[in-house]
Length: 151
Image (cartoon, rainbow, N blue to C red; front, side):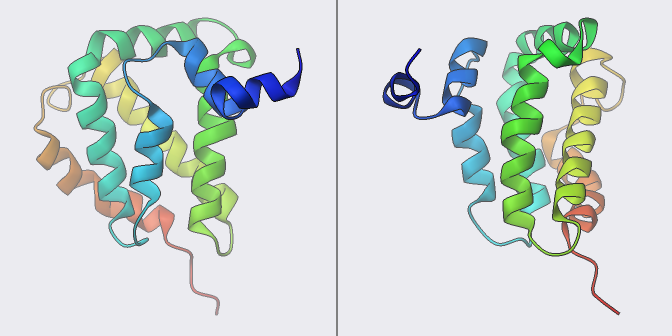
């Protein structure tokens, strides 16, 4: 296939990946909205957007995560999206020392949240109000996002 067709129809490879997943919303648009703004509050925006996007789609998301974890991760569109799109965008946004590592850690925290809230449905997290999840989780995630000061 000619690469220009991908660009014409989907914008880029990330857009093609999203189209193949047939998700109920455009995660790239939501991630761009989260990343738009100051570093301060980025964790709270991410957790709120993540929960508000997926809470109404719990069954869909649970199925997507289970299928990603059930097969090889090399063939998983969900993990391709996470590592090739979301983590890359966060690394670009976080900047500073260790940005790629910090972005990967952010991704791992969001995957953990997804597994516990939507797949394992571990209480009280599974039914916790989004405001409570944001208030409890955002400070720790914000610490990961913030570059360490050089000594």
